[in-house]
Each structure stands twice: as structure tokens, then as C-alpha cells.
Length: 462
Image (cartoon, rainbow, N blue to C red):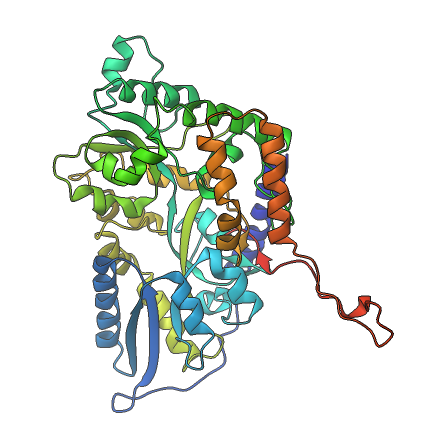
């Protein structure tokens, strides 16, 4: 029920944003205009793999060539965290690539400005041109805060030499009818089939919140008690426990999954690329890495469905800072960077799923002459993304829960799943809602009026 309510609320928010974008908007106020001799100077900051960075440099170079009155300089950083750090500095970038996970931080700290009116003034039509889920992901406070650029759902990568659908059917094992959908029972059967091969294991899923989230959502559960300002995980609730129990029945079977000791010798990705592991979960950015092993034959499937088709996703958007050197020039660059021909050049590197439907459905992304053979799985899975809250303290939460989630997956005996999940939920509360610091009044008693709000900074889903 919670998931359906969230989707309905999100659809309403998106309708509001799209209505605003399609309506007549006043042109943005005039700002500094450059000349060919003294162009307006802007900075664009982004992160990504080397091949992506090179393609983005090409985007910048083409814009500068087409717009002699503007000079955009490009800065590549090593992570999304580095972008946020730069935004808080004295010289923030004028335009930047942002992870959806950081949108709540950026909006709350007023490090950006909404793009809906700026793009509407430039006749950018949304409608069916962009993935609606990505537009909704970057909509906050009833405005389109950033323009979605790339969206990548978590999917299952599988070794087609270890998992042969035809051989499974001949053995009367449950198999999917197509690459569009499969059940958890079919997923479990594929893991067992792969593990029957000499020296191979069936599947590895990381023992993290990110790893279990798609299964929790697929089973009808929720990861947190609130989608915007969570105070606790909800793994001990019935739907979550039922989904976990079904998943752990496979993932705790060391005949099907690598043990911690085996993973210390070679991690899951290495085992997958060397033909010793049937399946791993991952995003589109795994594709170029897997292609580096010519002997590896692989393809992709959606995350398996327990009750519903659900996954999580990695979403990136183009944003403009609160005070760019020129708002109009910055908006012009965003329009240029999101043009299909510009996005296609970046998509060819193989790391991203374009938010532009035109590019996502083109060979620039599908790359039909390369693996995976069914890249359209990424496009179809976008509609199934459920976005967890974008917490600034996500890494702290994962760190606090790491040993307990590890126990769920690998403890020799898991006697009481209810007790184990209740303990995890309780630990999550100490991270999500730390005790408010109390100060003493002159009389020596605590002054409640000076207590800080215990609710941590967070935002809606990434």
C-alpha cells in the first residue's frame, strides 16, 4: 500500500512539474552577456569513467565552438561526493552533474536553481521525450530542480555459458519466457543450475541495504518507515521479513553462493568474469568492464520478481548553481548537453542509460553488435525503480549495519529472523535519529528549548 501511495504521489508531483514546463513561462531575467573577445566564462563539473569524461569534453568543445560568446571550461572529479564538496566551496561550478542521492542536500542548502522555467523558455518539450521516472526523481518542491541525464536500474547480469535456458527447459526446470520478466523461483533455479557446473557458484548479492532493497520492494515491503524523513528501517515488519526469508533461503546456501573466505580470494566481479559465478547484480556501468574479458559471454535480466517488478536505480542530472556567471548561458549549455546527438556520443562509451528516450532506443545505447544482447532490459527496468530516501548519512548507516547484514547472509545458524531484523531496525534508529544534544540551564537542569531537532537531513528518493 505504501509503495502504491508513493507512486501516486510521485505521479501527481510529476504532473505538476510537467504542467509548469509546458505552460508559457516568462523568459529568465537578462544577465551578463559576453562577446567573442570577452566571452562569458562558465565552469562545468562532472564525474565518470575516463571514456565518459572524454565524451563530455567533446560536448563542451562543441558548445564552445557553436557559442563564441561563451567559454565553458570542464573539470572532471573522481566522484559524486567531490561535486558536492566543490559546490560548498568559495568557487562552485556553474553547471554540474549530480547524483540524485545528493539532490536533497543541494536543494536544502540552496546550491542550485530550478530548471523548469529556464528550459520551458527554450522550448524544451518533455512529454514522452524523457523517462518520466527520471523527471520525477529530479522534481522537488514542485519544481524540476535538475535535468535528468542518465538513469540506470539495477539488473541481474548472468553468464550465458553457466546458465543455458534451453538446457534448463530440457531438464524441466522453471525458466523465463523472455528477457522482460522472471520470478524469484526461476532466479533460484538459475542459481542452482549454474552451481551444478564444476567449480562454479550460482549467484552473489552484496550483503548491504542496496543489495537487499530490490527484493524488499518486490515482496511488497518498504525499506524505511518514511520516504522523506525516515527514522528507522522496517526490516522486522511482516512484508519485509517474508521477502528476506525467501531471498535468504537462496543467499545463505553456500552451495549456491560464494562464502566470505572464497570472496576474500577473488571478489564477486572477478569470479563472474572468470566463469566461476553465474549471476551478479549491477548497473549499466558494469558493461564496459565485462566487455574487457573477450571470453566472457553475458547477458542481462531484470531483478527477479517476488510479488512485483521492482528495482532501485542510479540517476544523474545536469544542474545549474544558485549563482552562475550567466544563468542564460548556463541554461543554453544544459540544452546543448542534453541534445540527442550530444548524449549519444557519451552513451557510446557504454556506461550510462540515457534519460532521453530517443537516445536510449537508438543503437548509440543498445549497441546491438556488442554484449549484452538484450540491453533493452535497462530501458524496461527504469519503470520499476523505487527510489529510497536520499540520506546524507547513507554511508554511516551502511557502516553501522554492515556486521549485522553480514550475519544475515553468512552466520552458520540464523535462529530467529524476527529478532535479527528487530536488532537491525533498532541500530538504524540510532543512526537516523541520534539523541538530541542537551544543554544545561543556569539552574543545572536541561533546557528543552535548546535541544536540536533530532531528525537528520534527508530528502525524497534519488
